[in-house]
Amino acid sequence: MEQFSISKTFFPGVPLIDLSKPESKSQLVKACEDFGFFKVINHGIPTQFITELESEALKFFSLPISHKEKAGPPDPFGYGSKKIGNNGDVGWVEYLLLNTNTQSDYHKFASIFGEAAEKFRCIVNEYVSRVKKMACEILEMLADGLKIQQRNGFSKLLMDEESDSVFRLNHYPPCPTEFGESSQNLIGFGEHTDPQIITALRSNNTSGLQISLTEGNWISIPPDSNSFFINVGDSLQVMTNGRFKSVRHRVVANSSKSRLSMIYFGGPPLSEKIAPLPSLMKGEDDSLYKEFTWFEYKKSAFKSRLADNRLGLFEKI
Ligand code: GA4
Image 1 (tube, rainbow, N blue to C red):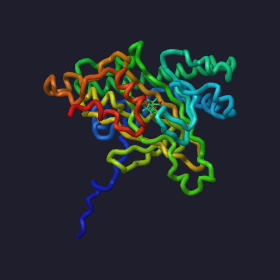
Image 2: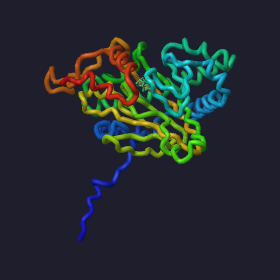
Image 3: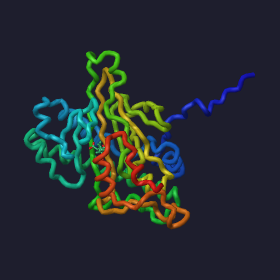
Image 4: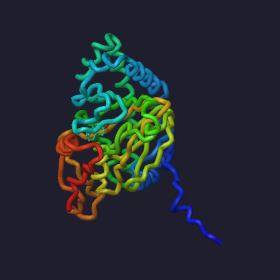
């Protein structure tokens, strides 16, 4: 009788982690090792904070382009459309990039929102502080799961006043019909890994997000507006000396529905040295990576193209 090897062909699905269960720690570690990506439920963020920001974001994106452009260009913060970064990447997307620490970018919104700019700022701040708290809890569970003595070994970098974290609202309008059949393959946001420590994404129920575990193979992630999707960033890969993988991901455009995602990128202070935690190396000199600060990595990242293997430059040969 013919035997089927299910394990080789069947994709078991994205790890689903229940944050309310302390025993999730080991599942979290495994998800970061195997996928660098997982979905969390029971995340503790009340729906009201999510839907409030979502409706503000939709209000913003539905303004005429000439209004939205007043909040641009993204240098690197502000409104951007199609152009991603400074090195020639484009996608079927418009977005708002915001710094989570300084409020200096909000003057860009005052001319569009008028007094509502202040309300927008408050709603973003409230949302970001809750998502940051959840991200820190996840990082602490991971530190426990890895048996790192300092439970806040990772999370303290996000909690630091100088933490260089970013917040992004991405709006992917439905792809117009004149693009015809090729619209199926139109890229919303090109493939890349995130340079920071950890990313927390919440989207509406429109599909588009895909992850790649092996080169050239893409897995579509079913959307779930009640959950958060978390991914390991390059910096966490380095801090775990390659044990956790920063996941390559992208967004493909949808031909009929618009997709809105709200993304928190938790990063360390600029002066922070990004290096494997000593307890995660066998010997002192066993780091797979050269020494660098977050400032150096970020500078190099912003010179790169989206799809580049940014960590490659920092690997020891
Ligand atoms: C990817 C993760 C975040 O969205 C981001 C992106 C940034 C940008 O949009 O300006 C980058 C990209 C991201 C990595 C490589 C460079 C910089 C676009 C790009 C081509 C805000 C970030 O920190 O790095």
